[in-house]
Length: 574
Ligand code: ADP
Image (cartoon, rainbow, N blue to C red; front, side):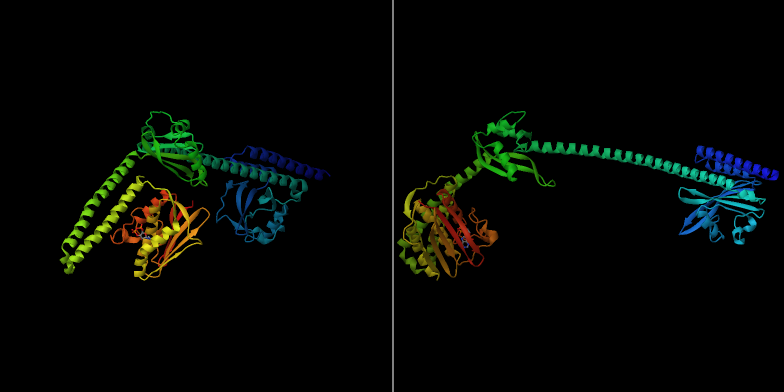
């Protein structure tokens, strides 16, 4: 009992020492910093070694790589030798299976403590990392959280049953748990530190980015100021008046030309000012609204503003990349007075010149006829007779041309007074047809007129001008048709009557059709190679001006290249 009591006492004493080492471990690890960590581990190992009176205490650390489990000796304390901390490398790293410790690995993973006299181990288990002088061995697994980190090893020079007693093993287990917790603590501290550094780095990076963005923003601001200055200068240098408004017409910007054109000296233009200045001429606010709603440019021509002629454009400002929203309107005011006066002077000159041309033309023709009359013998000289005939026909063509020019300038200057008398359109068309019938038949062309029931369609208007338009359409049909014929159809509608002239001639390309009815416009390249015998390119233009002046319309109904055309004169009834 006495011996038993002594053994009990010793066991208690060892346990107390281990517990002392444990409390030291807890305290030391708690205060550990990354710098003091390794020293502290060795200190704890030393304390444990002394407590258990063993010759060697060490810690082996696991490493998994490529699906295999390795281990290496990390920390070592020797009773009679130097401590050491080893680094993981190819030389220190061993695979469990290779050093014969596969069996240990399996037991330790389960949390078992291996505590045996050395003689009980299998030979291959003693090849690696067991001192030759070792008699007893305790191996305690260390876990960091769920992860098996490695183990603590205790080598004693003497073997004793008592070292594997339950209280002692439990105490060592507690040491291993504390060690695992300390490692976990250290890892977390390291992660935190790493995170702190990365946060610091990120903050630094963001600050740099922010500075860069700020610099870019400044540059952009500067650039936009420059752009604005350029734009403002351009707007002010415009000779046209420029007014920028929002969607409701509130003036946001205007240039000097507005004051110049409108003869004002306002330092601030408002919508109310614009409405008031154009009162009776146009509704400024309404036009802005119209441009916004219809999303298209609106042009107002011939605005007589005091002594001036103005043209106004209202253009919506669309945000193209932004679903085409309209954010405002640009109103341009163009002073057309000078251009209009120039046009007028040109027209007048044209009218006078044309008029003056007629006198010598009449004289030339008259003289040619006089020669024929006074010298009948010239008829015997065919070349002279031909020359005289040439003079006469050329004079006729020229006179016709001059008359056309005169017509145009008079019509454009609104100097033509049209009569308004009732007449029978059927009779008029039939008369025109008769006049050209001989020419058509002579060229082997069909020449037909199709009338509605009844022989009379009364219209009111200028009879001779109507005749002029019909003859022009018939003349063109004849001129541009070499086969087939010309078919005229008169149809009576509810409010209008139509005279349609169809031919089976050369037809007009679709691209050319849009240019018909324009001044001097002749289809294709004919405008450049004008043949006086053919025409002047003014017939349709004059027809349009005349028709419009009479409240009628002329238009191309259909035409296809090589398949003929159909032109229509549509007159109001009654
Ligand atoms: P022009 O004096 O040249 O005939 P117009 O104004 O009467 O002048 O006609 C303009 C152009 O339209 C003509 O040059 C011609 O090319 C084309 N055109 C007019 N009528 C016809 C038609 N019936 N068939 C084909 N082309 C025509």
